[in-house]
Each structure stands twice: as C-alpha cells, then as structure tokens.
Amino acid sequence: MRKSKQDRQAMLKQTIAENPFITDDALAKKFSVSVQTIRLDRMELSIPELRERIKYVAKRQFDDVKALHEDEVIGEIVDLQLDAQAISLLEIGQEHVFSRTGIARGHHLFAQANSLAVAVINDALALTSKASIHFIRPVKTGERVVAKAKVIEKEHVRTIVEVNSYAGQDHVFRGVFTMFRSSGKTKTAGVTAPAHEES
Image (cartoon, rainbow, N blue to C red; front, side, top):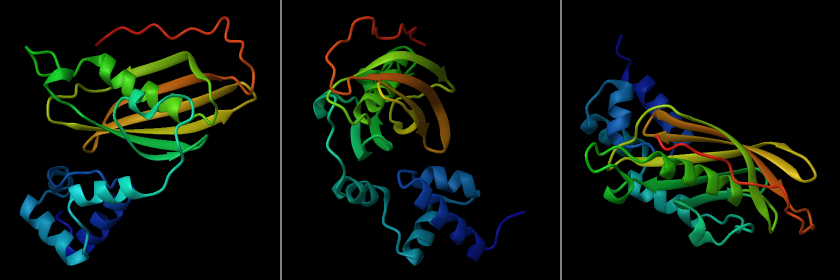
C-alpha cells in the first residue's frame, strides 16, 4: 500500500538523516515513486541535493588521521572520530573495475574498508593483524561506495573495528578488522597484514 505524502516525507527525512549520501534514484526505488517526486519532497522539506549534502559533511570539523597520511586512505574521509567511528566515500571509476564486466575489483573495496579501519585508530602506529571479510554484492562502475567504520572493542594494544560499506541502499561489504596499536611501543614483530583473495 502506497504511503501518504506526509508519511513518505517523514520517512524520507529520517532516511536522509541516517544516510546523507543516499541518491535520489535510491530514494525513489525505496519509496516506489518517481525521482521527480523525491526532488519535490526534498524541496518542500528544504533538504539540499546530494552534492550539497556531501559538501556540508566534508566541511564539518573532524579529527585528524594519526596512523597514516590522509592521501594513503582509499576514498575520501568525510567523518572521523578517533577510536569511535569514521566514514569515507569512494567513487567507482573505470580504474577500479574489470574491463569485461564493469564490476569493481574486490581489493578496492577491501582497501577502502581496511584503510578506514587504520584511520580510525587514535595512535601513530596501527596495523591490521586479522580480518574477516564478506563481499555481499558486486559493485559497478559509477556507483558511490560509502564505508562506515565503528570501533566495537578496544584494549591496550588491540582494537576491533567493524566496517560496513554501502552502494545506495545496498549493503555491499562487511569487514571485521583486528587492529594492533603501539600504545607508545615500537615493537611490531609478529604483526602481519591479512591474506586476501580478490573477488
């Protein structure tokens, strides 16, 4: 049963608040209406278009990355609260996909998630010691992948970070990363990067 305009707009506002990077196309599919209807709803609710929402999020003050240089992060960090949570965006271009299928190579999604897991650590040294990953659905050229990292457990020299990645409304990747942190120590023997099979 189709929702009333009032109910749809209330849910639209809540959906965008939870995921400011969702596209009008994805919203139209979610609410079973046209893209034009979504645009009119946004205008009535004074919700800016996606490009402006991304600019707004990018202008917010957030913590500085400590464990690596920002240009070493795969994707663009748009939110970072050290030892708590982080968000990055990755636009999937031709350089990220298999030429025959247009499907993103798995190591790009892994690298986005893994580098975000490193970036969220509040330490000058952070290394991945173990990772459990799951590719949920293929990502194609032109899609925007939003990776969200959350620290779920923190100990003296170990932090566990969960990263979930989305393309539109679709959950496309999940990873749980066990991160080694120095806590002022420099010894790193025995810490290795995880093996990874490309999808």
